Image (cartoon, rainbow, N blue to C red; front, side):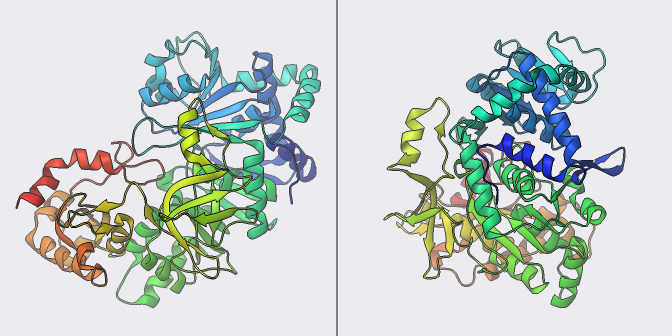
Length: 552
């Protein structure tokens, strides 16, 4: 079990121990290739040396704007080895959103993946005077920005100065303690500007150690990553946990290619948000449960030992279908502010419908109003430059999660909803929208759903049909727009919604619904990068449709 004082020391020790063994498998020019622990370590040290030579001091913030790729890993490890603080931005964000994060964090250098990301941020670089240089992973032709550096030349320069800076690198690693910042990660934010979550080396290491104690990683395991490394879920579970466990990490080429990459890599486990599992189940579902199970197992391969799930609630019906197929989904729960894992189901301690027992060393209790509180070494240092928000979130040593939950007699935690998302009808009845939506999403005809009803006399829903399943069942070829206008589709959808909600209270029934011909998306600001619906955005965008359901 790792006992290092910081993440830089952990990486050094593992590289010295594992050396020529494969550490990362990634696709380049259409083929998967392996990089050894020595390879990754050498490039990370070159990156760190180049940053130090450029004037980066311990504690300085360095931005990282890129899609998942091997350079993301190396840049992150290089920033940490230099004693600096990584400030990663989600790749789909807009220029103004990225500008806000870099300016708020006071970033001094920036790593960018390609010309498209640079172009998006370009108009705002002049308003970021603290940034002294930008390193671009992909080659650029004719770029005019004066502070640009190419990734190969940046690493090459780092290699040239590495010998002279080796004592400084050693000194910085030794000086890094558990209380020193490793990263400032901006929450995706369902409302307002995101807050910069300050996570220390000790926060992340404690979470990694607890995860490995609860669910050990074998040396022969191959883990596939496709979730964004700019999100704490993937960063801790897909990057740092395999790093600490000494297993092989394989990178999906693109989020859209993850199922193809599963076939190529044949991983032993992977993590995902519920959305992927829901979509795969919808595509595999048939009238015969055994055939559905065979299809699911074929999708995920013959070596898959378990599937991890977090970021949003997993509908129980989806978990049951995978369990019946022999594919156990280990649902967990956490926040960026908790590094992130608070609890998760284990292969040998598992309960459907729950998010598992708390991790070792993690305290959880339920407040009088039902809010989940947690305390322990995994809890953030606070919000960057935001003492007011820090004081609200951290009270008497407890992190107030904003989630509602319960703990059963066996210690399993269940999440029932968000305090802020709780809908209160005009009758005073309270509705947890995630619960209702989870029941709706279990139906193979429903791809996405969001219920509304705050201050109203009944619930309504915005529903995106699963076009492929609707077309297959009705034997028609209509596009999504035509399906939403088809009376047969609307009639059958009504029946399915009623059936999905047959066991809930009267006030939790969806009285009216609207079919949407366009899915909610991250690009349009309707979902966070962890694929949670931003309710306020959706309500505003579809205000006319929602009001229409209450005027009729």
